[in-house]
Each structure stands twice: as structure tokens, then as C-alpha cells.
Length: 327
Ligand code: F6P
Image 1 (cartoon, rainbow, N blue to C red):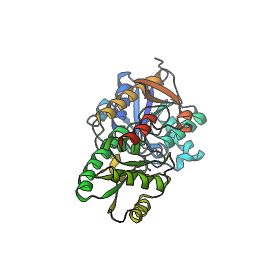
Image 2: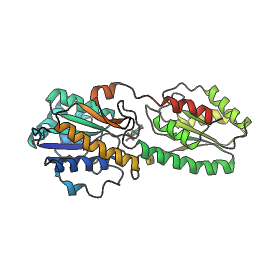
Image 3: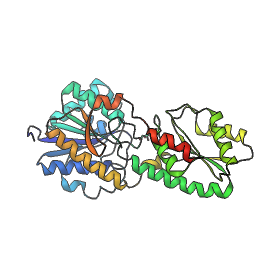
Image 4: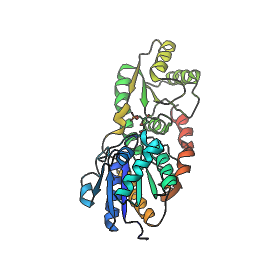
């Protein structure tokens, strides 16, 4: 491994996700293992601009592997979108003699990292951290597994009460632009339908599905709605359905930010640990401007530009089997 990189820094940016702490821990400990200095930047790019940068060591990251959120905190920095903001950030990178950066986050984080690398030539590696799983170049992003486990647990609970009262429930899950959480949790919880941002979901089709379910003696009516779907906001969908099925009481549950909290699942802890090590090792090997991911059980590297411009596709097999299983 090349020794030209002596000092690294790590930050988390954008919406937090379970597993970010585990990834920070892996980055810091890998740096210690290779005798490299490592800084933690607080509140993402905002902290890089405001010089909220502190030295970390292997012990600074004890007891965080199992904790949700990010102890470095996170933000969405408007200032880093500007050339002046990035210049201030670069001044601080120089001040602390930081040779390379590890950025944990999603699309916005990687867009910033890519521009920063192009402008200032500071080597950057991204670790995919978002519950949305919407990044091209990795099978899973940090937090997706934990979030879907939370969602499935909630839907199981809603099913109990939905069954008891013969009610219809629309359960809104996160996914401003993507339906990964919605699709996976719908299949895992046996919902009768799922409304995704990636698909047109005409009201007539939804009505047909619900009618079919009733004809087939289905005793619950659970529908998973991704927040960014094309049909409209969840309360309006529920209103439409209430008009169509006045005999069924229809309720809405918005799961919201509780999907982003809680301890990371085992899968997320392992993914975070592997990607944290891979991020540091790849920088030390001279790689840059890439996202580290896992594809087909192997660490993979995708140019940051590709990871932000290409669209991660929903699993076609899940899309197919949801129709078969909700019969
Ligand atoms: O973390 C991604 C995400 O959960 C999106 O699905 C959602 O739309 C967004 O973050 C909301 O986050 P915030 O309230 O932090 O803006």
C-alpha cells in the first residue's frame, strides 16, 4: 500500500441511517491499523466548512458499533453546494493536512464529494449510507436492512389490529424517489398491494386489487405506500378508497422517521464494517472518486459520477412475485 496518504478524515452527510456509526468505527480502526492519522468531521460538509474537525483514535469509536444514528452527526449543507463554501472547506482540509476523505451518505453526499475532488484533487471515497437503498453500484446501502426490519415489525403490528376490526390500512413508508423500502417490506409483510414511485399506479388497478382480495376472502387490507409515489399523498389515496369502499373503515399510518432510528441489524453492521475497511484500503492503494459497495458478495468500486447519475433498479423478481403472493 502506498504511504503518500498519512492523514484521513471521515464524515457522515445527508439523512442518517443505522450502520453509519459502525462504518465510522471501521474507518477509524482501519486507519489506526495502518498507522494513519484520522479526523472526524462533525455535521458533514457543514463541519468541514466551519472547521469542526477532531482527531479520533481506535478508542474514540468504542461502543458505537451497535448504535443507530451517527455520533459525528449529519446535515444537508447548502453552503457546500457553492464554490465559496467548498473553498472554505478546502482551507480546513489544508489546515489539518488531511490527504484523503471518506464520505458516508447518499446521492447528495456523493455529488458534493465528486465536485470537491474535481476542484481540489483531494482523494475521496464514498460509502453508501441511506435507508433508501437508491444508489447505483451496490446491492445494499447502510441502513436499508435495518429500516425494512423496522417497517415489517410495524406492519405486523398493524395487521393485528386491522384484522380485529376488518379495517383497511394504508401504511406510508419512506422513499422520496425510490420504492426499495416499500417493495421489500410489502413482500415481507404480505401486503395486498404496494404503490411505488417507479410505477404508474392507476386508482382503478388498486380498486380492482382490493375487490379481488375481498372476493378471495382475504381478511386484511394492508397497502404499503412509498412517500414519493405517483398517485398522490397517502391521505388523498385513502379518501378516494373510502369513497369507493364506504363499507370499509380506512386508516392511514405514516411511519416517518422512526424508520431511520434504532440499532443497526447484523447485516448492516457487517456491511458497514466491510465497506469501512475497503474505503480506507482503497484510498491507501491510490483509488479515488469511487463509491465502495458490495455486489454479488464482493466489494465493488463504482465511479461516484456513475453512482449518482445511474438509477438503481428495483429487484425484478420481487416485483414479479408480489403479484403472485398477494392473491
Ligand atoms: O434518508 C432518506 C430519506 O429517508 C427519504 O426517504 C426521505 O424523503 C428523506 O430522507 C427525509 O429526510 P429529512 O426529513 O431528514 O429531510
